[in-house]
Amino acid sequence: MISVIQPPDAMALLSQLEAESLSNNAYGELYDLYRNCSLAVLNSGVQTDNAKELLDKFTDFDINVVRNERGVKLELINPPKSAFVDGEIITSIQTNLYAVLRDIIKISTVSPRHILPTGMDESSLPHGKLITNIIFNILRSANILHAGKNPNTIVCWGGHSITDQEYDYAYNVGIQLGLRKFDICTGCGPGIMEAPMVGANFGQTKQNSSTCSFVGLTEPSIIAAEPPNAMVSDLVILPDIEKRLEAFVRFGNAIIVFPGGPGTVEELLYILSIKMLPENRHEQVPLVLTGSEESREYFNTINTFIKNTLGEKVTRSYRIIINDPEEVAIHVKNCLEMVKEHRTLRGDSYCFNWSLNIPEILQTPFIPTHENMHNLNISKDLEPYQLAAVMRQAFSGIVSGNVKEFGIRQIEEHGPYVIRGDSDIMKSMDRLLADFVNQGRFKLQSHEYKPCYKIEIGGE
Image (cartoon, rainbow, N blue to C red; front, side):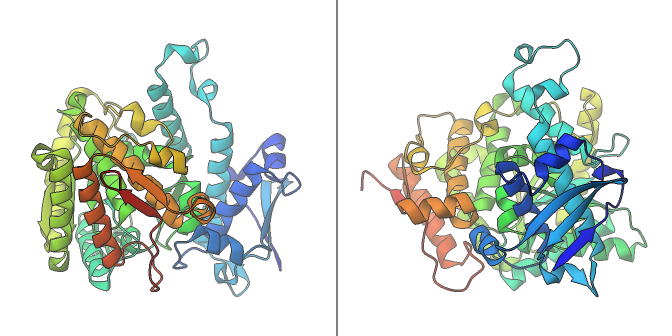
């Protein structure tokens, strides 16, 4: 089966070199990246969390970028049938296919020399500032940054493997956010990443409004494992997980954390590391942890883990709200007034938080090889923000071994990752992960989960 998709608008315009680099006549790392991300978009709405299984299922799929008078058209060879209705590609999937094209080109071409003003040398700016400017450049190209808009974007974090009750609660929170016409930003996959968008869509419909946007921020190895949900109106692919996380906290005006697994803990540790950095003590980044009554014990466990590893003080940087969707929305709305006032006084943008300081350890890509995972310095001797950042790397590796193609292949070849560190911290981490395994928070599949990690406690 071969289908030809025409560009929906001018964002499909490419130079000859860009088009040729993505042509299936130029097989290589860039084309493979583009093909895999496009395949994920074509599987939008499919419930999966295993990149290797998805790629293996469609080994005969190809995509060819063909230049024409309108810019480029896409030739799809053996695409998933679920992407079509009566022979026509679903409109949102068509749009997101070109979003993939736009962002993969950005990933391959963006560099300091493309974003620096004429005459400015790369060495004149700290590496972290260059990374932040690259992220801004990608978000601006995706047309999701709107300078004249009041703070209105709510980032929702949470897991893909959740219970029906947890989905329903996140949906109801979404309704309350939609009634207040908030924009929703998630990781764009299934589960919690979908529920608030669906609810917000219903909430704004009750207001006879259609102003909300539903932004999905992802990165190549995640989108390959977790295809976008059907609600995503604006898809953006960042180069790696670190840039994706930075995009969340700079683009979002408030963060809501729902129940999840290791990936959710990775996200929570990321923002807590930023909040604990002394330079950020006056920054306004509202953070709410919330779930239904069923999730009360889950958040008690998370809260205990944070206190035992990072200290009691850090728990003041977030609020836990149980079983009250309306209170969550009201609290967020009140917090956004403070965000607006703070950014107005600082002269900072409402749509991109430039003033937030992010430690370089959170910006540097962490490659979860067995050696890197084993060599993590998980120690109480670190500053709390540094410890949170290192633990973030550990959970990032676990996520990779759980759902990402690279990590899955690492585990297949070398066995589970071995994670070691301070005995008390390792015991807390082991208890938390064991709870996640027992609660089925690692995988969507119902069969028994085989851990991709081993916690080493006291040299065991």
